[in-house]
Image (cartoon, rainbow, N blue to C red; front, side):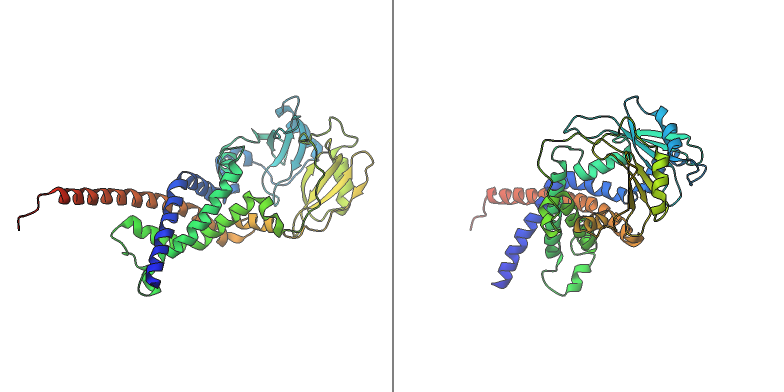
Length: 376
């Protein structure tokens, strides 16, 4: 009786596993492949856009106002500078980000200008939504669907988590020892053997990637596991923040006011906006950048807050994209992103072949039934 129950469950899990793979393959493959590529985001951006990184020096040699002035001719007349980002770890270009006014409810439109830190020479310019790397980010996070893409990707993550659990059940040998599961020729099909073995070895990282992806896509659903933040008052949609048309003090003066509280090298300078009229200067610090605020009107300096404690959603994002997790984990999730495409492909091939031999078997049985029976 117990064996019959196990076989029925196996049949049920097989159907769940099969139809998850077949119905979601068209989404699983682009999500997984783009995720693998984005593990090496910085290297990929530098490879695809070499002119952005053709710097003569990685150290900022000019005051921030000089970089802002150098970027301004590359911007449209109605674009205002929002921030300057310094080279990471003292290597690479300066990046100036600007935007134009947007109506409430609209997504902000940004333009980035890359500059040589040594002399402010413009290296490249691109819209915030332009380029192959940005395309991969939107593909991975939303499948290029703005309205409900994030939720759709989240449900794919839920389905993939279920697929991992049903997959380990189906991998487990029906009879014999656990070691039989590692045999290459479990079936007379190369695709099936690849599916069984590769699926087992990637099971844990694939489940982690799927689960963390679902967590990131549904922050409100998993928010109950976080400390409750203060609720913002409900109101009509607000326009994206826009830099002020004119400021009372310069970026150089704001940086000079913040330097006595610096915890390391400058990371970025954010311009005052219509929603937050203060300069925000971020400095390197262990555990996250330290942000010093300088009120544009009064010049009052607000010291940085202590590093934010690790939250579940930040931890899930770091695990998912490999940020700060070490080279070993990054390699593992890179492989874990490629493997689902292989599993989806081999699964489709297995299904098509099974349809073929099932049709042939049904045809043979029909022919045998219609054949004249020998006289007794």
